[in-house]
Image (cartoon, rainbow, N blue to C red; front, side, top):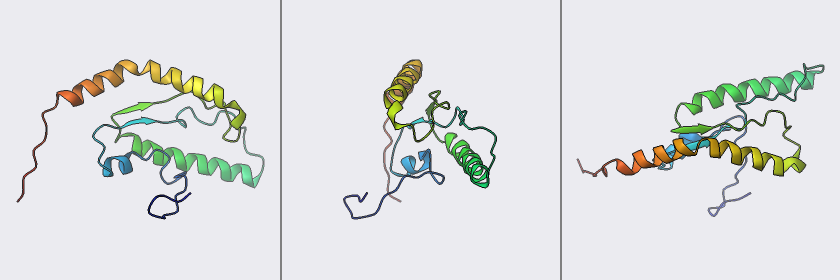
Length: 128
């Protein structure tokens, strides 16, 4: 997919599965992230092939990178979707229901976060 500037954009995958630092760099004051991988890939069995081992390596690397990014968020929502494989697109309604429920469980934290942000005095810029 190309953006308005003609740049080719792809899913961050392993490099930026939870792009919190990129969001901050774009100027976000408050970051509420959703980590769909926090529940693990519970659908995976012990690997029996080289491809299975490679897949588990990718999952492990993604978790390390995601865990490093999580520290930069104001709030992390973690829907329990580890039982659903990445290619099970027909389960979209189930994923939405689980995500909606996870967001509702966090609604008080979201409200408190927004209230704290609104209560902060505006930062004034100064030239040096």
